[in-house]
Length: 78
Image (cartoon, rainbow, N blue to C red; front, side, top):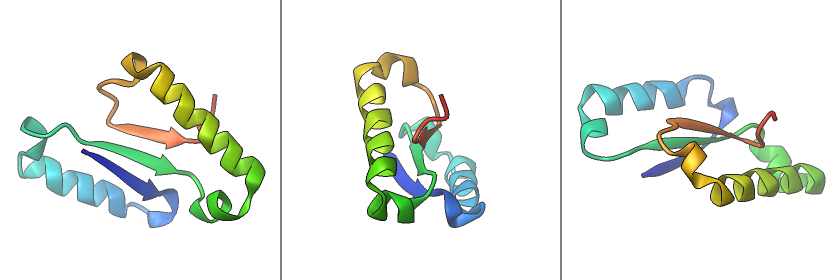
């Protein structure tokens, strides 16, 4: 299960993840968070949107390197 979240949630995603973990869901369902650094820029900035797309393509093409990661940041800082 993959959750797409906005970085500006200020910790709510971590609380949500903690609730999922404390109830044992991670033992049954692999869960990942994909964090968009700035959702407003994603919608309004074509250059930023392009960087996000490049990050997603990198993840898809090299998916084995990302397996097991609990949280991915889009765009990547690399």
